[in-house]
Image (cartoon, rainbow, N blue to C red):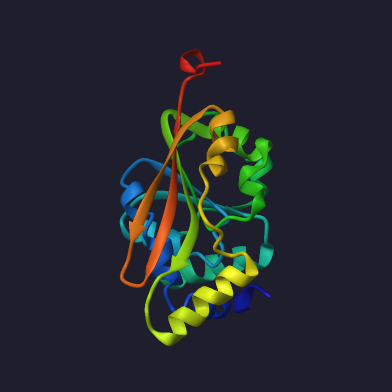
Length: 199
């Protein structure tokens, strides 16, 4: 059902989904970038448009085909890999940034976080767009906000959400991004060399 992704994402977000995904762009300015769960390829296209060295990984063959088609139609050469975040097929310290937008529970799997740590360079960061809240005042925005709350898609932020990231050896903080009708939380996880970690 990969072909329905854009339609569903656009519908539930009232058309704000791509704006939300692009909100990570300022964190991705240079170097080699790995996107986990690249989905239909919108962020990959954005990064390649900016002449950045972007690689995408996704477990879904259907998503990979959709993303590859989108990138080729845009005139870009895809660098997409099928695989799992718990077992990244890349050598140590391959990337300066690892990014994930609205990932599922796999992102807090200790094996995933260990793999992210392994493939990041010594000054690398993991950028995770974790949550979005619709904050607009129009009736449809209020209805969507209630639906997000009801389905658990927009839980209240709690600092303990950072615990798995910190246990994996990262220094982590949260950036709050205010948009016109929504609010986002982005986790910024800085790789700390093991010798500098506080046990």
